[in-house]
Length: 372
Ligand SMILES: NC(=O)c1ccc[n+]([C@@H]2O[C@H](COP(=O)([O-])OP(=O)(O)OC[C@H]3O[C@@H](n4cnc5c(N)ncnc54)[C@H](O)[C@@H]3O)[C@@H](O)[C@H]2O)c1
Ligand SMILES: [Zn+2]
Ligand SMILES: [Zn+2]
Image 1 (tube, rainbow, N blue to C red):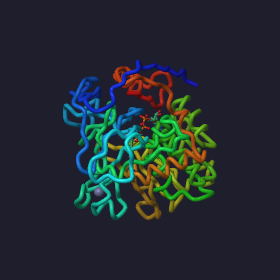
Image 2: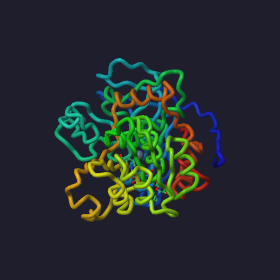
Image 3: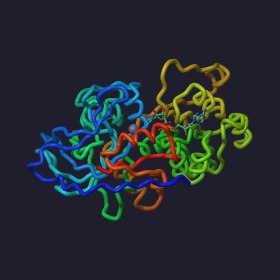
Image 4: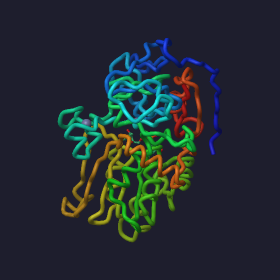
């Protein structure tokens, strides 16, 4: 296992009314994020403010930092918050100041056509559908890598955390677990299925755990990093394959007796997408989680020229308080433990070091806990 680096943060009692600024991670431009003092948010109608007690960094934040996913300069980034309710705006009921809550990376309004038809992640904010519309934190509105966070549509998005669970046990549910599990759920994995997960980064590892939760008989994790392949076994893979060493499609065909029932793509490249298609049995499902760029090609032989009864389905991380509640229950009842994925801890003031470690994948890092 990789070494764990723990940093302790000086106690800083910055709560309470009258304290009008906060520390936050602000995006200024490509490769330029800074922790600085900014105005503290206040809750308006339907909103809440939480004091963030734990958050983390997502691979998507690294894309933002590198300028590969554009956001406006001045935005506070981050989208994985655990915190304590500090302020409740008018119209938010059933909560109390001081309660500990988990808020998903995706914050649907719960009112629009997309939300009401079950596509919460494509929330239209009171209107129809908007692609990726549910992803607001650290994208279109200020995010979670800060001491305080304004939660929009708070009534639909704050899930209470039972006292017996620590922040560390639930923080990864906000994004990577919700996303990874959804890969298996959208793929409609059934008891007894064979499932292959391409890439064992944080998302793929959670997809591996999700496949096991859904009842897969055989889970095959594919990656090229020894530490991640070892973690894949810990998260539920029976078999791991190193794509650098074997022909993975051929190997999977052998292991599954002709092709997998479900493949989950968790990287977002032509190679892994194509392998995920080629390793399926006729009628199998490719459940895609990766974020792609450029053109994706579909060679005719990889899907029986379009006649193989294959299903290809994509999913954006599911959010909203009911999703978070279900994931919390899954942890609370011991069905899954994600804490092994939190390999490092940093105080908020050293988040740029955490970005450096995380983006360079040094020291066996998987996810970093950031404690404001
Ligand atoms: N659908 C969603 O809602 C959602 C949410 C978050 C992230 N994502 C996307 O999910 C993908 C994975 O994110 P992550 O943070 O886990 O990624 P990561 O970069 O941390 O991990 C990628 C892994 O892929 C492995 N890899 C590289 N080439 C490979 C190959 N040919 N075959 C198998 N494995 C290979 C690497 O060794 C690494 O372990 C990204 O595209 C990310 O943008 C999607
Ligand atoms: Zn994310
Ligand atoms: Zn909506």
